[in-house]
Image (tube, rainbow, N blue to C red):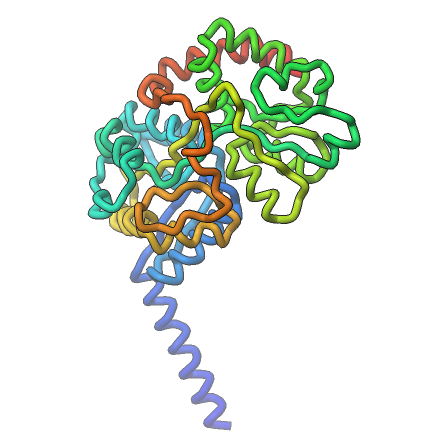
Length: 342
């Protein structure tokens, strides 16, 4: 009987020691703006390797930007990982994020470093991905529709009610689409295009990857998304084919920022440096995330859409990451497209 009591006491002591060790490492308040599967994987891996307890919230990049702005006087977040670069650049230009030069910078691709330099090191690139769409090839056949290869093809009246994209107010993906079309066509023509496209849109979703998940489930035929989100559906066995539009397309630099006034600053820097390592970025494919990693030594997933195979525009991150420009484009979208949404 005594030995049972002793064993229980040892176990209890071990448990409390473990709790103390975890407590000693502290906490980290993280907002993750990528797909929930990679968010959970990153959280789990970091907790295991660091002993730091991560409180994670999954929000789209537009929602995160709004939350960080609203909480500027009393920040509840330490670090913001992933999501399109434009809102990260907007947060940087408003002084909502902290300058930090990671010792990992010299291992990163040029585009990731340029992102940091343009924001005076208040953000950094963690991955990149081109914009396009994914369509359900089975529905395409059933409905006798032609493969949409170009932006212009999506205006065909045959596509009425068959397309989904996200709302650019909440989604960084959709804001990238809006800014890309403006750069490809010019502003007047782009809004004219979006008004015509609106006739074929069945739903504007909150999250950027939701439209292609709906296409995978057969709820819509086409989802306008980042191509890597379409690829992840294909890899999961859904009949989804990804397309890089023939006229050219924009791309995202998924970014990471430390919030100014972070309560757990040391732990935020630990996450920041850790998330830029080749080892961590090579693991992203295990969560069906097929973006191009920013660390030069990270393994590029064989399924990842390669930039060299896509007609990319010279996306102007500085102009379209400017808060005034974003506000102006979104207000016009609300007025001319959102107000007439189906």
